[in-house]
Image 1: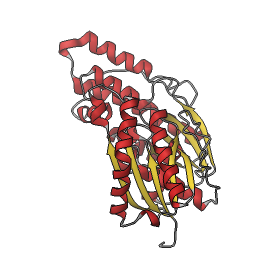
Image 2: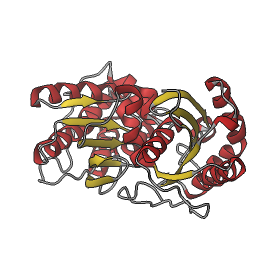
Image 3: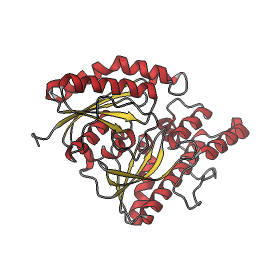
Image 4: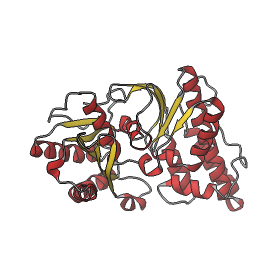
Length: 340
């Protein structure tokens, strides 16, 4: 509705400067300036490079988002910003910018949790979140299972990775296979020409009775396989078999969590949620279990400002008090802290 507050969201937790604008739960603009090309030659994100890129991109990206939404800064009713978790220097750029905009415009500031924002963004595509729902967040830095009674008030951690996150494993395996960074899209693409059953890679912690994840052993198994088979290697088969091992464990654990907590709605978010095999297997297993699956379109799975704005809108709607202008950037902000 036209009288709903307009929230501008700022996301700078890693290598993408994301600016999103929402009116209530309607997306008005989602603009991203990525520095990924600057990191590719290093095979991973370099924090100092990311921070400088955010500094350069901040004002132009805000201006671009406002232009797309047909708005002026004076039209913004509140600012939301990722305060953590993430890279400390990158977070600082976003938090400092958000404070400046909020102070200059005289509007409320909301420092929000990056992971909770990945949950909130689905509302922009599929409407209000069921209460409760089960969220599985899979990205370069996180593999988490969360029970979400109310994304503006309470998020409960059920399980997480004990070593490499799923996206981190994709990046490392891609490097072993000689594929470019970031690894996720390239492995997904290579896997389409391979067989997911060609190689029996291990499923870490698949049947240990917990809701935690482990992908370090799988990554090592792939590296040893590649080293052993050398010239006779089928990259598509390795990619497909590795990918199958990851998504098998992810979907198994997610459905186990739904069953344990009697939840019938599963949301998948984070960059790895863009993986085509994960989306397909999750849908297949959710259908068999009678669980409703929600996965945002790929552009809303990766880091973006829209997700931050969406969570800010939730907080405003819930009557949550704004953050003080003294809020820190917290690189290890726990998921249970939705807003600071």
